[in-house]
Length: 469
Image (cartoon, rainbow, N blue to C red; front, side, top):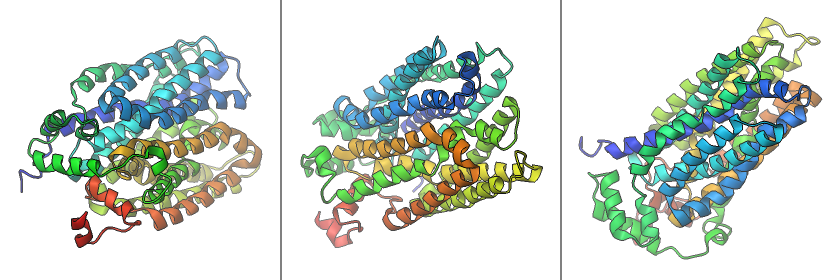
């Protein structure tokens, strides 16, 4: 038993590589929150919220296109080459953002960075899911979200540390720092093997056998390879069209709906514009607003660490429903904060309630949605559709993200904080109902078993049915 529970060394390497990419992804989500406070002054964009929103959102437009193309890219070129290209893209486009000489150049650089990030959002979870044993897959995927939260915190801390420098320098360093971990990661990525499932898809069986021996030396390689071959050999063509008809239409509806709810409930409004929200609550200085946003993410980090420790014991559904419930309560706290505002001022108690509300939204998100988006996006489809399914999920996620990031500042200034967060609360209630009705419990299931769930109309096959497949 002790031998069976040992975690292969290669799994640690895969997890560390994914975590590094997660740090970069999270860093970009928050460093722009601090950088925008300074590049808007440098480029003369004071009071031009729509121009700032466009620069901030440029990366999300890129992410949407990258996520939609990511499924094709990883199926055509492989999981490993795609991830290596992602790391190189981070280096190039982070540096071009840092050296931008105009708002247009900054926006284009961030759009190209977004393309890179979008592909990574597809490639990294699938690479992890196909490279580590099932018994630790959930925790390893959640570790990617842990790394993303760490990256968010580092982004805010960098903004704090650099806030004393001149406006012509500090935002450039904030945006360029993400290139450093990408450069350090490249040697490790080049040593990782391609995933066995992709190699089987391409008919490279002996290479797949070698990959399985490398990623889990203590597993029954022949039996696992046989399972993968059996699953893939029984799969017919159809690709994207197959996702729109039975038996996978139900899975498509689930992942697309879940992806949309993950973002439309407002999490990136609190990350990309966290300092601006605190300023709307009466916090006057850039340093104070960035500091409070940093503290929010530090608290959220504790929540996602808790999620990582229980995801493979509690199961996916309890964690997801608990996280959404926390978000609903916290969004209502934000409604109270803004609804009880007296004139243009906020009392200390209101600011404290608002801080707790923003912290709670992030806690609920990273405990539930944030942790499990990577799990469900990589578990819900068979190998030949996994990339396309992840693209569909992340595509709907990023479409909702565009809506939030492009228009949140305008909406906040137009209808106020109470109505803005009240709308988020209503959407979170709808998300809770959606998850309750459609989310399967995939804890401890092999990827091939989960395929049987969707093929059986959203029910786990009885043992005799499973044996007959």
